[in-house]
Length: 456
Image 1 (cartoon, helix red, strand yellow):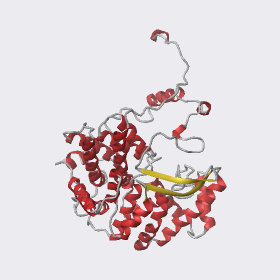
Image 2 (tube, one colour):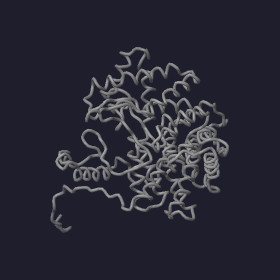
Image 3 (tube, one colour):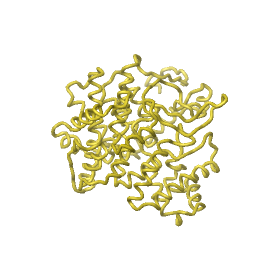
Image 4 (cartoon, helix red, strand yellow):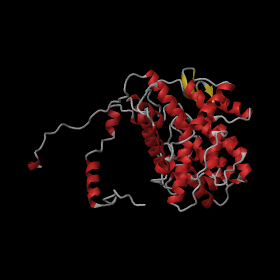
């Protein structure tokens, strides 16, 4: 499908010349960042994030102060002060799904009792519907190869169906957030089905959500033609949603949510901005890269149990000789965690169980071996200021592939989870902040005289 507005091709001489001018007159001397102590990416030279706000929603811990020294430790993630590992252990022990309970915790600051949880799940189920003909008129009208674009467009269009769209009073914003949390699975899955049908010429399936099913169950049921799934499949996807629901507040899409919210804009615009951030491959697309990397690895490495052969492939990755030639081992390393990512640690056991159900024990063993060897290879090949460990994306892509989720939905699944955190941060920003977030940029351009057009 060729866009009708694409008047000039990407490689047209006009665009190339204009782009060259842009580069020539916009490049900044890298030494100036150090000269003026600019925290590029809002991080100092050691990689520590610049403190830009306060939150009670979640916390990341990756070190301890021992005898006055900062000592890296196993990472920990807390939602409203509760260790995520304990949260997951609690609902798994009870044989319950946990995502809806997690949404309640993030939004309202406490765990619901039994009746509160049932009432909240019923409220979400009542919101799990789209305006009449929305699927036909919006989702299917302009199918896209990129589900995140479809999701963002759908969210912005929902503004037009809301009679109080611009009202940012807390009760109205909460209502909007709960509705978006409820319909994200529908928008994502229906967007994929539209793409699969209109652009890939496949059969079209549109299954209505079931109010008696959890978010994870509805995703699997609506996605699959036969609507069937196993208990373990739904359980593992539910845990994945919980682990992706929030992450410390300092990630790019959540910061985007707070920045845009601080301007006083509407909920639909704020969430669409967050989606645009998450779409970026530096943020939400890593798990698909992990799957692609392993798919190539499985064809290039003859003996998956041979440590030296696996190490050899990992070195090729770092030397830009394998996969996408980016010089990265995807799924390894994190901006905050060094010793371990708690999400990856808690997830791994359930990934193992799902791999056994699917008969993919050898593939899981290869993932585990790479998790063990990659830090060694990275330490040998690169100068790094901190340790490297597997992050949650390392295993989530493998899980999604085992669940039969198409790669087009990997990042939307992330969004289905993370909108819980975005919503909590939007509410917290509205409750506490009185000023628009406005960072400072120093101009390093020299003053010049205006030259009349005839003299240029």
